Image (cartoon, rainbow, N blue to C red):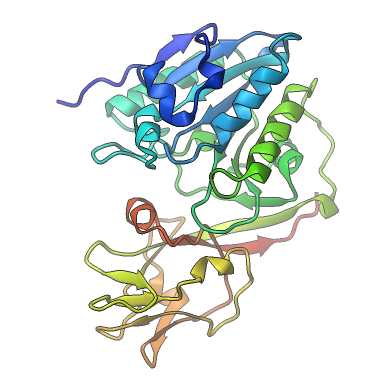
Length: 339
């Protein structure tokens, strides 16, 4: 039987917590924790950090917010969800045997699913104003926001962070999808862990959200948003070996600089890698309907994996562990936005 995963709910910050690194939080919090802090406006902004233990920008940004308002008080109530502290202690996305903490916010009967339902119940009872989930990428990407609803409040939240916005509906078990039933919600991707620009950007976004008196109702101007739609998630089957650069025995050799292609509009015929067996792409491409559409995107010509149509990738990573635990990348298309 699976061990219970208890949600710790607090109405004050444990003493000294705001001075600790992500790797030290497990010494102060027994597991995933929801901390409610009062503010001048009672409906809280919910901020999630460390759903992935190796992505610490969210926690570093929250520390700066806590220090900024230590003496004056918060302009709006703030509810902090600190996720996978066990993985953060090891500097890993998730530990072996754990689920991905950003894939447990939908249907499911695991202890982790039960824990997330408690979070949602808590926040519904507090009439949550907005929800922010802060992440890092392992590959090179610009900063961008992700939404799961094509609606004005969601556009406003995303563009408060930046003009580049990605709309997706799969995977549908992420935190932002669950919170979209309660309030405007956004996932923000803040570059790679440890980058000052990402921490500062996340902190500024949280701060701006706390200062909103209400959610704007006017449409976002078309020039203020570059909108993309995620069409497919690209995975590498477990039985397929791969490398970045030449490696003996690898089934696929990818360019060692592959993540430079993130958010680049790639033409048909672009070469992504070379295969050493079967003369097939050896990849999976899962669309929003859950179908493998690999043949829609890839072909092998002269042992080269080539694109069969123009695409724009995001979240390309060179981290083998992340690829195995999650994916190689996503493919996107540009959406026309008229407000």
